[in-house]
Length: 88
Image (cartoon, rainbow, N blue to C red; front, side):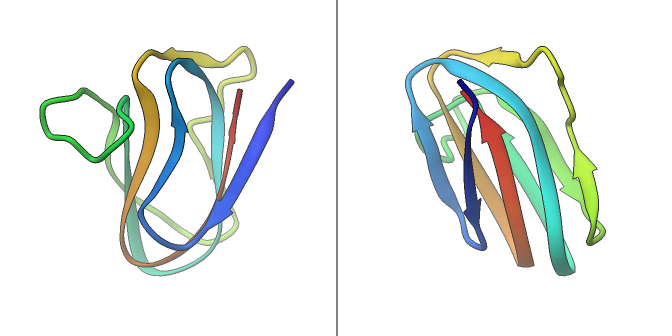
């Protein structure tokens, strides 16, 4: 069952393994995001997506079947951004 999290700041989305289905950006002012396979924004853990520069009303990283992460899911943002992450 897919879940979602809306936010506008750095956030721990999930701890432990799961699937990422996508990220939707509803508004931004020069915003960027990076996604980590981690429960925190740890530079020792792999990035699922390096810094992505976004535009409002755009879906990013759309994976209908999902992609697995193993340690957790963390979003790290810069500037102003409103997002929705869909995951399992």
